Structures are given as C-alpha cells and as structure tokens.
Length: 188
Image (cartoon, helix red, strand yellow):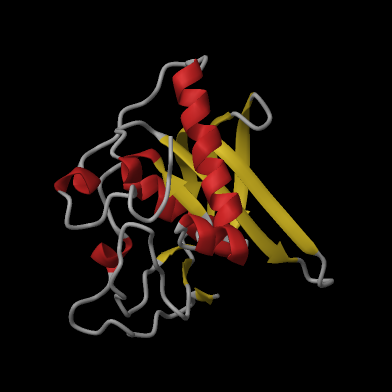
C-alpha cells in the first residue's frame, strides 16, 4: 500500500472516528504487509530527503484506521536518550495491543501533540498516563510481548491505541483552559 500525506485519512473524514476490530492471529499475509508498509512509512518519514520526495509528514507512529483500515494494527518508532545521553530506539509493529495497566501519575508533552490525521495545530496539554504496560503481538519479534513504557514512549503508545477507539489527541485538550498546569505531572 502506498502511504503518504495524500492517502492518510484526515480528521474531517468520519472513518477516523470509527472503532477498529481485533485481527486474527496468526496474522494474514495482508495484515503483515500492511504493518510492514506502516512501519516503513514511520521509518522513512524522519529522513528529510525521503519525506520530501514521497510527500511524507514526520511521524513516530501510525495506526491502520488512519489508512481507512479498521484493524487494531499500529507501527511505532520512538528514539529517546537515556540518562547517560545514549540513543535508545523502540520499534514495534503491533497487532491487537492493549493497555493492561497505567500509572496514576499524569504526563503531557510541553509542546503538545500532533497527528498525521490532524493537519491543523491544536494547542494545549494532552494529559495522559506517565507509565503504561502494553501487551500485544509484535511482528518484528514474531511474538507476544509486554512493553513497560514511561514518558514519551508511553504517550506515543496511548496516542496510537486511542485511534482504535476513534479518539483523537485534541479530544483531551481542555476547552476552558488548554494550558492548565497539572499537579504532579511528568512534563516531557
């Protein structure tokens, strides 16, 4: 499947608000290929020359519903630095991922969130859980995995998994006070 800024469904399309269904395991060849294509999009979207040549918007994740496919499939690539300044890369091609536990502590990105399906900027804090545990099948490792994520990775996973419910990040932004301080929050 060709994935670029023109083929990604935007938030004015009602399909983006529809619920995604679980996929049968083991994955069909069609579902495997879709996950591979989504993963390749995320990977290529952060390479400036490829992004420009192929009309890709930079991304850390994409879910199948953003392509009009109502399946619980998502691809994520998150790069972070550890406390010693070393780069750590988290990569997943997930089928049927579920959040099985979440911290009480809230977290948000100080600069706000964005989405491939949301062309306009929506300013404000998107308050999420600081830590989550996600279980699902990962095509990269061809196994059922458990991800214990905190900080930015936790936020990205929550963002992508909410696409399965038809929820967009700006649904969480307070209409009354979009930049209200959140006591005890991890600010990233």
